[in-house]
Image (cartoon, rainbow, N blue to C red; front, side, top):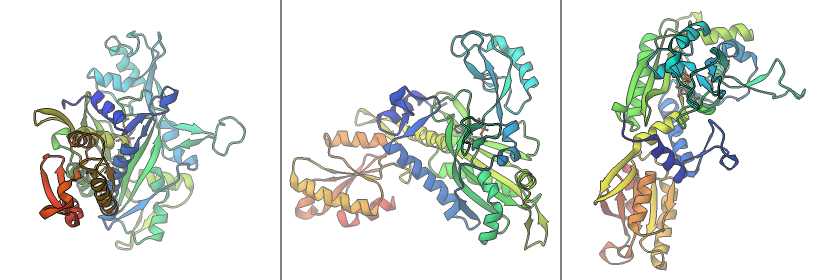
Length: 462
Ligand code: ATP
């Protein structure tokens, strides 16, 4: 497990405006977080990098953004109204609810949410003496029952109550992709095999939201669904798994902090399922992304429930079939947490401790900070403003920073992961060094003199 503590990450996130507790001024709300000014930049950069990988860099992928609200029958077809549940038990003393499979896992007993209620009750009963209530410590719990995670709404219902035919918030974002499979085939050059990528919101009535952004009740999922010919799944599945692993490494996650884990217990229609796990601070390896080989289940179900034939007439083989689906699905919050935690380092520099976020420059919330050496020298400030305005047009998010001495500014920028600091000093204004500035590099703390005209090339090249 890494030396970084989750509390350090939460504290940095709050202190520097990455992530705030949701509804904080009202005392906070379990499982809800808001992304602050720097957080939203990091989040958007991760999304952009993911989108580039799956949509822009591929010829066989198409993007999508489907509506949050869907016909309620979608969730019957997908199995969510009946089978999307977590096992819950309630402490008889203080009424705290626990997620039984996760508590069993904590004491080394294999369990998961796909087991039946009776299997879980049996396991729970056998191990009850080892599972105290996380709140009051008592070991008396109710029986385990399956608790449905879908969040219901009264959208379009004017009766004033939630009826027996509620509309749901999406329990997973990917359903929108299946609903639009035929639309994409009919309106683009897509030919099987091809994929659809989407980043969309999901909501789950999680029993115990925990570990900061790891388990929240509202989150975004970045999903890809790759449609292949029946039984032509295996090689493509292996390639997808490898590609997703490679992407995390390319984006800067240290390989030692990742691992692949195969599911022991598959849902009845799946042919294979793996998770990419990340070694999260303070609690260790857990799921980052799911990679699922789902056969023809999704499109078959939606064909049946909607009455619309979603089979595909293959122009290459001449066959007609329901395509098989290979899925990748990752929560943006978990990715954000993994990138932030992995980049967080405490180092010694010139005999002092510094916190530095070694984010890949593409992901850094601020790409360059521009400073006049002294903020009370108008000629330095004017020149620095010129450079600042120029860079804003050329290299993305730039921050003006003239607060405190230059050393403090560097420390502050290190802590938010700014890869470059540009300082305008007296040498910028005259002599042989006229129109050159100091560039200071976050990771090495090295400094070099660069001409203003060559600045954006230097920064963009690294
Ligand atoms: P877990 O076992 O951790 O509950 P899951 O297997 O139910 O996760 P999936 O339904 O496969 O998760 O969802 C795909 C991805 O969505 C997960 O890999 C994770 O990154 C993300 N995700 C799922 N639930 C949450 C949540 N409550 N908060 C944040 N991200 C989530």
